[in-house]
Image 1 (cartoon, rainbow, N blue to C red):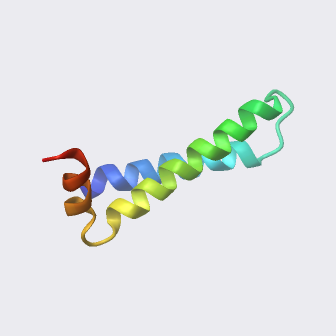
Image 2: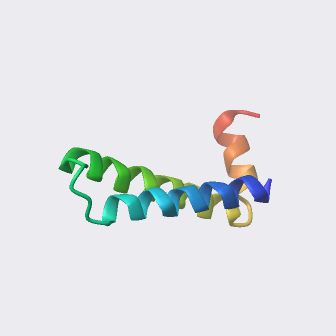
Amino acid sequence: MGFWYMLLLFIGICVFFAGILPKRGFPLVVKIGLLGGGALCIGFSLFMFSPGSAEIMADLLGL
């Protein structure tokens, strides 16, 4: 499972930096969406790497 969390972390970092880097083709709304989506992916993957997160997710999902 750690592979998928690491992949999600890498994708989140790439998306976050795509929102930070100045590109003329992206409007402001898309840049804010990229920043938010990247931060969400990074935050979720870091949460899932923490100890005890599997039990928290199991309780939230009712498993």
